[in-house]
Length: 251
Image 1 (cartoon, rainbow, N blue to C red):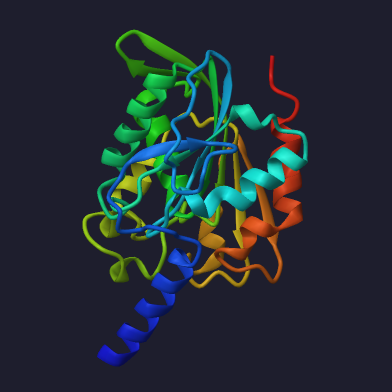
Image 2 (image 1 turned 30 degrees about the horizontal axis):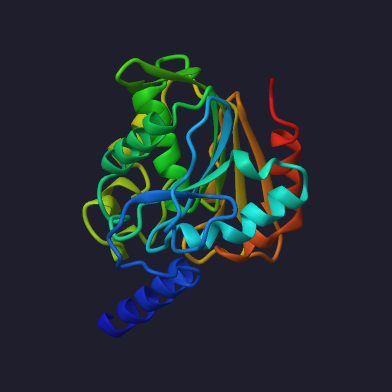
């Protein structure tokens, strides 16, 4: 049993971190389209619509570069895209990383935000919305008098109904992504923004794979056949659907 646990844990870690560049860096920040993958160049703040890409458990912002380039190729303005980096602290509570996301956005002061999260990044996005965007999930309070309009949320291979492998993740976030957890029940109550949920049928991280879907009046679902937890980011059907919602910039 212990050997099976180690083998499955290794598979999950490899799957979630395969695109990571510096998972142990412990540096929390953001990069923009055109930045170096290590995030050494700071983003420019501006009052416009931003598309925020949020990586998953064990990863870093570099893991979202491929999706970023695909969106730009499909007409999303490069200067709108930022990659939120919380590498090194992905195991911390979702509320804490949602707070980090809020702090990053406050410094940018965008007029509108669209959130795109892969894996655990989708849960960070949804936790941010639930915590800072009010009962109607339309206007987000970023602190210090800064407010922004919430557009749409996109979760890609995210455990919206938890994952059966939750116990293999590091504490404290693992308890929050257990199926039926109090955090998931809280997230799934009340008004929701328009939320696109993408699932991959060969996903071995979100188990079972259909737990990436959760039903609500404003939820939109798309399943990618033969994709796995990371390769779903390369799916043209996912890229096309996200870009269609984001380009051109909402007015």
